[in-house]
Image (cartoon, rainbow, N blue to C red):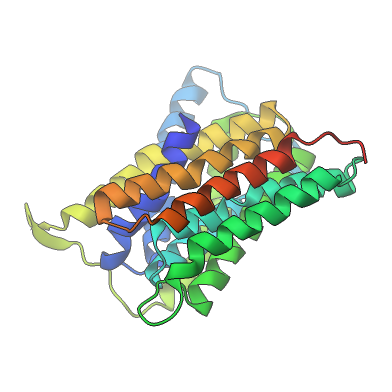
Length: 291
């Protein structure tokens, strides 16, 4: 369920970004999501089942995670899509995260990087080049700007997942996500105020822009309440490297969705490249920790 929801996020960005600047969209998304969580928190408080984070340190840790995994990751992805990158390519770049997580765990948390892991990293990099090869040059969708934004999203997501696993103690997913969203909102609001492009809510569908309204509703009700909450619970209950290894399934699924919905091209080189990325990530994640 998590992989399916996470894959849809890149497709939703393709629907929403033609009608809105990225940070304005995210500000509205965070605010509406907080409203939904506030209702859930109110119901939980009435039933005396609510547990808020304990201590100032935990609030601070959750705020850091919110800035990295909501403002940083989502801001990078949505800004990259706005800058013209395709859903399949941005998903492929950002979900190279399992490799970074595996290498971090091996290097800094008691393990070592094996030859098999280095080989997997090299194979995955070759696959990434194959997928990206047709996207450079005249008319290509990859530019320096959207690639930098995609890599920024990758680093923010990786750092956020590792930080949460290390510093955030188990607490109620509803209160934890509410705190994270609040921190993300405070960071993205100044950026949204700098955007000159308006959000185009008007359209033919009952006087509303159906694509923007649909993208916003799906982002709030499914991606944030569902996907972000599932990721929090997975990281709370499992190892960071094991959880992030699920993300290697996201790029192929996203690419297939983008092909079906937007007509994004899937060449033989692209398919081969995606296969190599999957093989490379598996080699890194499944390699033993012995040198």
